[in-house]
Length: 496
Image (cartoon, rainbow, N blue to C red):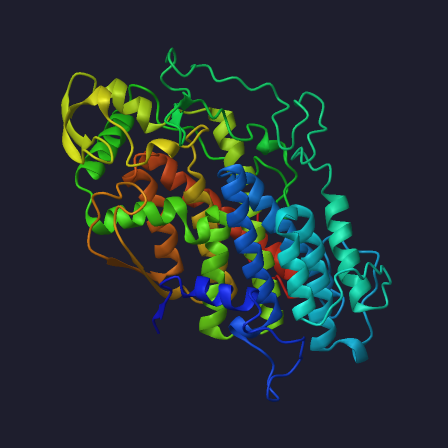
């Protein structure tokens, strides 16, 4: 089966957010339980996606932070749902009893997860608060009902969100800028991290060097290192940040690194239209919701394809986003532990003085240049990710979430296609004809995301390979924990 994405999800989203397709909560539609895009969990997930995209517009990309928001939103929904399931256990809402069998119906689940989703979304994405309130009213629910009665679905939903948010308030993320050592702004660094190399001088090639970005006014600025303390954030299901830490990256001067640096240059020099489209799609992602949101979109494709019920969607989103949240924590552990250089600096050093072929910029295309003039296939406004390289975040999250969807569905089949215009986000005055990217399996989708980062010039191959491996390890470990939470037999399941 082929399910063609073509961003149809966006059109649907605009429809139901505007009220064009809204109805009050109804446990049955024509006598049948709502599935796929009609189930309430799916609709709240879409609101989470648009809020994440809005957050990106307001705060610039911050994939670590948004992975935490999405992970905790779906944990809130999951915990509320468990109180109406016959055997599932909550992660944090442990003081609220399971409701009796007579109350375990779809309508109560819809109410509980809606209040949980609403409270968590409103707290993490307050600038979209009116959208969330409107959705509650469209569902026939009162957004001002703050009951904490554990005997009602409203109270359970409110309690679930409150419990999750309180439990995670001091989880090392510095959500409120209150951690000692920070500058008082939310999500600011409190570790005192300073790169060995400053933005103008590279004194240690193996270490990360920041690069200038250019803003809309054409001014150069240093964005700094994104959340250099993220390895200190408490994981959701994983034990600890360094649980699956990979071995070291290739050493400076090694034949391996020399070959991988050359590979980055060769891949860029031979970018096909499909390659360019893949680099852009994975760099920006659907709805600009970054990696955790990107794989939430893919998860929703699965929901539509397989016509998921509310129960199936609540469980899938929780598990997949747990992998994304824990994946960023583990990935940042490796990034900050090794503090490794990106290809931008490595190509300049390894190929200095040599004539190579590379992309010279949006209005220049591929030209002959000296190695020290090479740059990633990326716009000046986001020239290169502003944090160390090893391992790749895209590879970690994509490898992990792809494995999570494979384990959850019991099959590697995916079948999504995406139509894109190559160069639209990078060289808008040099556009190609539309191309179709095909993602036949979850594993292939994850690997395509990973290699796109090498093609784009953001990572060497070791960053990608070890990132994919790290993500898969997390997905397999979290799957066992997820099965325990939903009351399934974990004998025979791998887990470390």
